[in-house]
Amino acid sequence: MEDNIITSVQNARVKHVVALQQKSSLRREEGLFVVEGQREIEHCIACGYEMVEVFRIGENVTPQVYEKMAYRESTEGIIAIAKCKKHDLSALSIQKNPSPLIIVLERVEKPGNLGAILRTAEAAGVDAVIVCDPLTDLYNPNLIRASIGGVFSVPTAVCTSQECIDFLKKHKIKILTAQLQDSYEYYDYDMTSATAIVMGTESTGLTNQWRKAADAHIRIPMLGRLDSLNVSVSAAILMYEAVRQRKTK
Image (cartoon, rainbow, N blue to C red):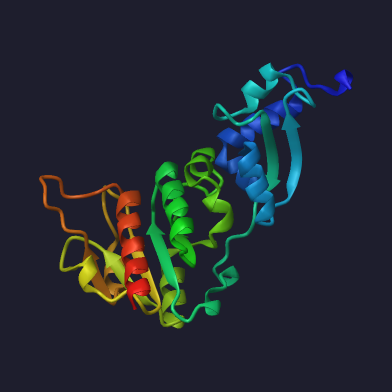
């Protein structure tokens, strides 16, 4: 058994794991990503992902080799390579709900923010998250960590903004854009019917393409000196307002 244990950090399989952790281009090219920790791996499998290779301390790698491969600490000594899924708009099954709640994110660039939004979307029972013109990939290790597995279980699509707008219009889903200008306070707008809440980056907000496509503009009132919130915090506020309205109704 010991002869099968990888003891060198220069081993090709070890280098492959490290490269998948670090390079989004390799993840896209090979259709593979790395998932760490017993809970995350079990959740990943439960959500229909296929494991390609599993590494466990003492079983097939030494602690030193595992430390080289792992992106974060405290992952129960287990790490795996899994196959990516396709994230096409056509794969979203929103027809199951006559009044779906969808979160749309335009050009969000920080993996941690996107991961946090997916975690909240899972908790709030959001029907889908659509990532438009992304500046990070869904299998970035920081995103997976921040989502606590939400990236595996929340139906998620990746597309251009125009493709998303066409999709929402086709399915008669109201488009609410979160913006400060020319907007209503968020709790004054009905979110109980089929609704898509669209958010942009903290630095530049949404593009005019989305502002023009919107059925309404909503804002979170800013009562202090600062004029914006972290996008993941804003998304959480708006998601749970939709949940509140729907439960009340």
